[in-house]
Length: 216
Image (cartoon, rainbow, N blue to C red):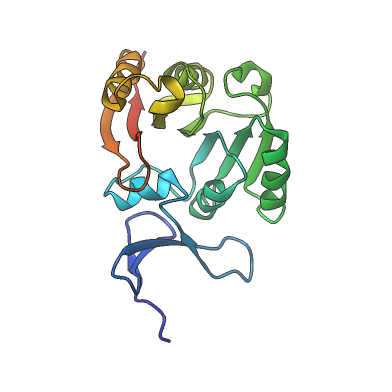
């Protein structure tokens, strides 16, 4: 079987191709020596879904990224592939998930796992420098508040926030769009919102916000 024809996406080390079923897929070039292209599943990664939905995200090969809600490291590993000359600081609260994240990070010199709660950025302020991008995918209620606190401590002026809003984690009784709008309103004054993208059909009740930190 022949290899699929790859197309550049505009992101460093991220490629798209058409799968056998006719759907568009993504892959990243494996940063681990001897590795090959790694399929990036949008149904298991909100960031992959965001890219497939046409968002030109501001992650560069030399970016410093603070990743909040790293889970077991699946999406984080693809971000590590992209920032081949940068660093990903990956914060995760669950010790069980951290076990997997440490295993993923072992061969990746640019991936730093941090066991901490993203609600309390003071707890890791000595481990994280100023960053170009904060990517947040946490299942807690105060999602906008967590983004604001971390941005005030770590995000460079004019740096970017990519916030995944999980409506059901905030208020399961309200309509998703109402929750999205409420969280986005909280960002006003701290961020200039550039894009709001619903992640259907890949992820129900999820929206991605791309925003730039406002000049103080």
